[in-house]
Image (cartoon, rainbow, N blue to C red):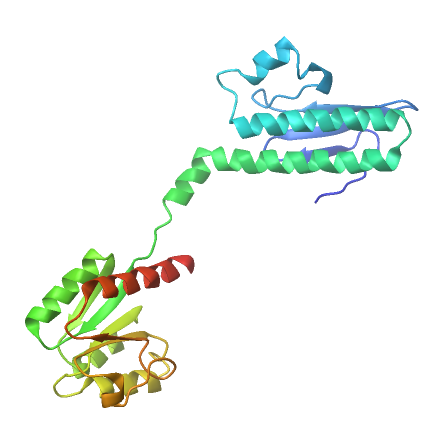
Amino acid sequence: MLVLSRRIHEEIHFPAQNIRVRILGQNSNSVRIGIDAPRDVLVVRAELVDTTQAHLLLNKPDTRTHALRNQLNKMALHLHTFHQLWRSGQLSEADAVLERVFSAFESIEETCLQNDPVTKEKQSSTPTRRCRSLLVEDDVNERELLAGLLNLSGCECDTVSDGQEALEYLSSHEPPDFVLLDMGLPQLSGPQMLGKLRNDPRWSKIKVFAVSGSTPTELGISIGNGGVDAWFHKPLHSCHLSELIRRGMETISGKN
């Protein structure tokens, strides 16, 4: 919260709204405040809020959002309360109300930025990174089916047919978000490749999802730290894999 003390003729500026507030003068009963604001920002005294004139002004076709009207109304009420407290000599209470005025200005700034088309365009143009995966599977048909499933689930998928090819891929590409690894591979097997991934700092943080007709115990592989992050038994249940991919994508999106 912004708290300020101003002398006569000193100003408070709100650059985002092009609003200036100046302390014009004071006497024993009141403080004169000047507010310089754009035409589309309505500023009224509290006693006018409920009048027909103020009602028509607040509902002009070019008035901003309902939230902005409420904020302006609240600010006017605060200024009226501030004036009454100052006239009665309750200076500390008046200062507290003036802080609420500043807070109301900050809320107006936030609303204006939310409605600003330039801000919206910047937000909408920010690209959302898609999930990326590497599928390591030696069976051609299963490789194509799994790759299709991953792409349909919203996760870009590159494929290789062997553990050795996978290591070569990882050495020349940005690490994927996860590797879907068949355990029964020729040349460099799934467990051997997993060991290389976990022992290399470049790849040790990659999530690895195992696919196998065997169990983790049979292959001597743990699930968790130092092992695989999930284990899928063949025949593969695609709905389980899709759900895991969805949760992984939400995690990736939250980091952007």
